[in-house]
Length: 184
Image (cartoon, rainbow, N blue to C red):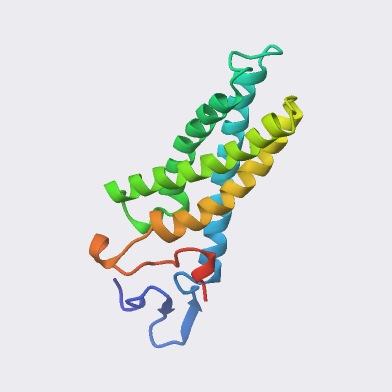
């Protein structure tokens, strides 16, 4: 570190001159917006994987291999998308929060089971209560509405419980707040 850098990395000072531009404080609004944007991009990729997998399984060729088992198809689609989004969130959205631990994997899986329940509930309601089974109705209920509810839940849960850094785990302070609700 040179004499022109500060210990915190937030203010650079030129030799014998005024402070240079100040970077946003870690965990501030700018960090929250970047993290939210990254989360949405990763989620968009997950959305494409989820919708694509589901539609292939249920509607490929008119009636796909799991046409009569849409909930099973949705579980397979969500699990596939979950693997993709886990690594996207781990390495990009919350990458500054350190490596994974057994606790992180277990919590990620737990919150995804809850999110899967939200999506299946929407799809099941459409299929079995409203008796709608067209590609449009399945995609609106299970993929759009169900995933919208699941995304909000996941964003909150991942930031608050999964991708966190505590002094015990890394020896450093958390560089960003847990989620939008804790950003003061």
